[in-house]
Image 1 (cartoon, rainbow, N blue to C red):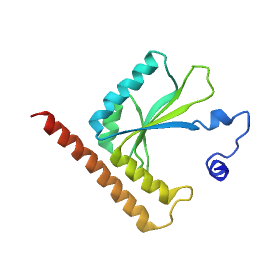
Image 2: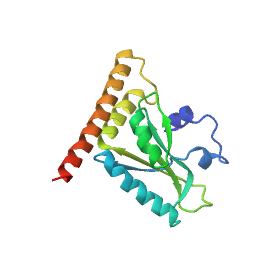
Image 3: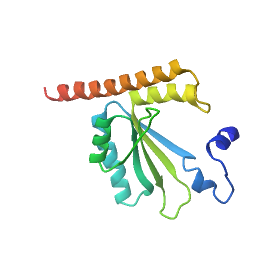
Image 4: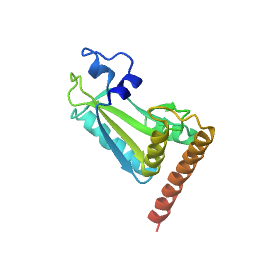
Length: 161
């Protein structure tokens, strides 16, 4: 663990520990298909608006997909493109506005979770040097995106009956 912290964060002190390490506590919210995300987002927004939770920074949607970027922008999320093909929505919340301690909420589909775990196993803490693995992860990410779109389509079609 200490080695991971040293690699990810260059200069941690007792004074800046909580401001530098904002993902000390975390929750991952997994859902089946992308059309479920607006409900999850609305729930989190409601907790913030009722001041049960406080945002430490603006929520960020990480994606490489231009269509997903547009989807997240409509929900007023900051979108950052990841060359690594990482896809996830991150909320950094605090229990009180004055709190130093944050909790990171990551929201993603089950397809995205599978890709993320495979990528993390191969690329963390040291990224793979294998060109083949990098290419295969890129292809898998595109398959994950296709799977998520197909799942949305299946559920939309089923709800029309």
